[in-house]
Amino acid sequence: MKALIKKAAIGFAATSMVVAAPASATIFEYTFNDGDVLTIDTDAGTGSWVGEDINATFSSPDFASFQGGASPSLSATLTSISGSRLINGAFQPVSSNPRHPEMLITRNGGERFNLWANWGNPIVGGDYVRRITDFTATEVPAPGMLGLFGLALIALGLGRRRRSKVTAA
Image (cartoon, one colour):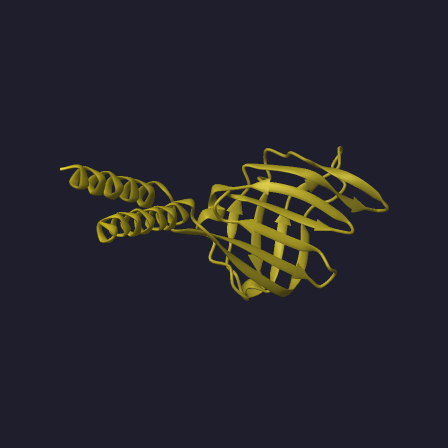
């Protein structure tokens, strides 16, 4: 009876982890012609664009469905954005404009990314567009899968221990 309860508990825990956690997440990293780097984390729904003349972080639920690739397709409305960019020799903070929602979109068939935002107060700059020269995608294992792996190791250890005691007698 104890063995049946253990098996049921392990089965329930494994099923709960698989259902509760996403299968995987991906972190996409794009390098641009001027050395800037754009990073998008599909699980966290966050991104950053860092370079010599820009340092911005942002978030969007639209990142969850982003597929990435060498010619990406994206139209993401940003729910938050912060940072600054160099315009006419001075760093200007991102500024909000209710008539112009901040977005991260691709252009020219996925050849370019456009950070569609306003910069400065009063506004002195707009869109920030760069051409993609390289990209990488890193798969991040889901916590549920790691938990299943751990449960499997525990089960193997318990099974081996039990067999050792039986054969020793």
